[in-house]
Image (cartoon, rainbow, N blue to C red; front, side, top):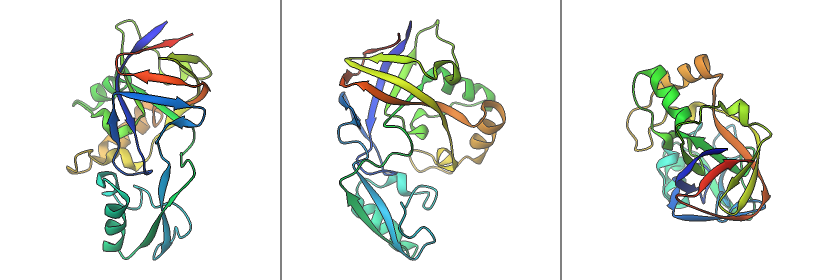
Length: 208
């Protein structure tokens, strides 16, 4: 079954910072090459000392284009941070996917269009007219995307960061409230990589 076609690809070199749009992505066994290979950690001045400094701690972090900009944002709030490299810094699984049909459902509930970029997926998929499955229906399924084989681990539970506008406009607390009340606080799916491969814009996402 064809779920849809790949409309956009994103990687996030530094966790919680602004993403990069790419036309093609190398999907390795540990995720997209160059995705979340660094993260900002708190050194001092905050209760999360020793842990990552995230959007929950600074609502402007997702607008920062590099580590230096993130460090400056933290300093403005009296927080000492550092950028660490050498690992993969995922919340849960290495690949995330959002399908426009799910965004459309949320938009209909809210009464206005919701930007898919708020959800920071690696892959944004434009559904075929026939696709209407919720995230739960895909859990455990194998998905073919370009030359890669993925396995759906779970639906993605969302937090306050989706209320932050991707371009820095005022936040929208109502979005998270409606998502929690009407969709179980879920948007998108987490996937593990079964077989590495290359994915390109326009590739089909198929459930096997």
